[in-house]
Length: 80
Image 1 (tube, rainbow, N blue to C red):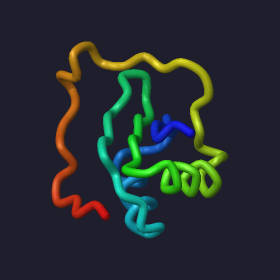
Image 2 (image 1 turned 180 degrees about the horizontal axis):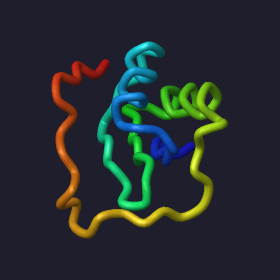
Image 3 (image 1 turned 90 degrees about the vertical axis):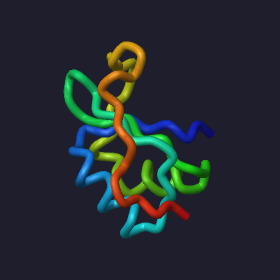
């Protein structure tokens, strides 16, 4: 199962949900059309997020920023 999940939520909301559920985050990227692309550190963590946040999943292809110029590290993230 893929560790990548696209969510119709803010980056802060996703960070909070991951911390609450003790899911490690490898990357968190804002999408230009709204929402975020989350890459979990494990497929188990991704399955947890998919199950808990299924109402917020973005299905299908999403547009991303070219060359990751809008990406930024997650400040203060401790991970697993």
